[in-house]
Amino acid sequence: MPGPGEVEFTDEQYEEYFGTSSEPLAPKSRRIPWWARFVGLFVAGAMALGGVLALVDNVRTNPDIRDPAAIEAAAWEEVNASPLGWLVEDILIFPIPEGRVGAFVTNNPPDGVITIDLRPWTADGLDELMDHEIGHLLDFALWEPRDPNRKGGLGTEAWAECAAVDAGTRRVDPRDPGGEYHCFDDELATYRATLSTVSEVCKRWADRECRSLAE
Image (cartoon, rainbow, N blue to C red; front, side, top):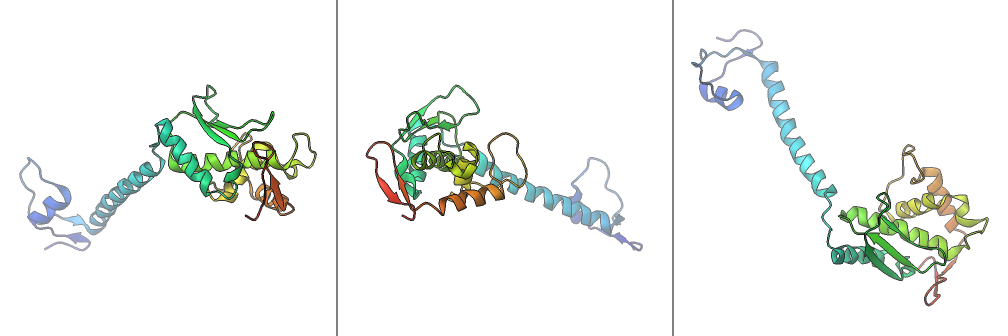
């Protein structure tokens, strides 16, 4: 009989939990402490769950949009879903030599064209990128480059990052990530407060259309 704190296994149970061995089987009473059995099962379960979570995260973060036509189509999908998507005049896909630059727009003069780097993208990453660039276009539509009241005092990239947060494709930064690409709670509040004073946005390129910000 097993003693206090010990568990007796059948041959089948022992092989299920601990595998088989080329060595002669131990006596039928395998005196494995109950806590060892519990820990073993817990670790095995955690490893299995971890594998599932890793697979889900890999699916979410694995770049799967690679073809230029697919990148452009996915980019237009997010642009068309945005209430500010009408500011985008065109989308171009080209290799951008500067590795840290995923896309850019120009303000000299603004033309509403978003150029995206030809690299593999995730769907989430591309959506965030589009909302960031649309944030730049909103800036270009609302203010002249040297306007002292431009963007409520926010930095150019902070404004665009907060535009992506406001669009729901980016999260607020809980701590400083370093560099100029960030959107903190106070910056998001400034972004929203600045836009609350704007009633109409006028595109200064192409057909120079004006729309209510509420549209």
